Image (cartoon, rainbow, N blue to C red; front, side, top):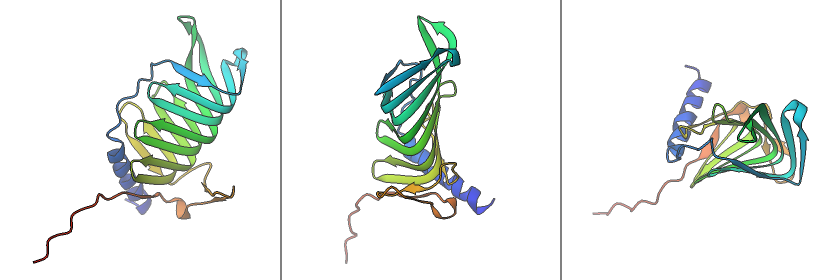
Length: 184
């Protein structure tokens, strides 16, 4: 097993442990949204939302600068069936006790998977893991982070980006305070 594969496996184990407290997401819940602007493209079966986009489904919220909502031509109970959300620009996905940030995100409602790309950070409690790509399975709560990314780079406060060395996964795990052993 290569060092990269070991690193990815270790990150998967660590992030899966950190995410195990997550409950199963209800991907059948209605999706509420808000945006500054919406453009319906019925012939293409999509809607484009832009400007302060906020989408909420059950206990998960997805915020971004822009989002394309793809839906099928099939209408059930008077509503088109949403199949996929593509978000870009300062994407933030929030679930109970967990926040993920990245440049891009795809929420595949059929597979119940959120994939984030580019300068990804997953935070839960005092634990933080950084990488290039994050995949969250909303049924199991399992989160896998690896160093590869299409968007690459970590955003700095001054608007520039820096790439993580060698596409590595980095992070910090909090350690609870422990009592000092009694000295004899």
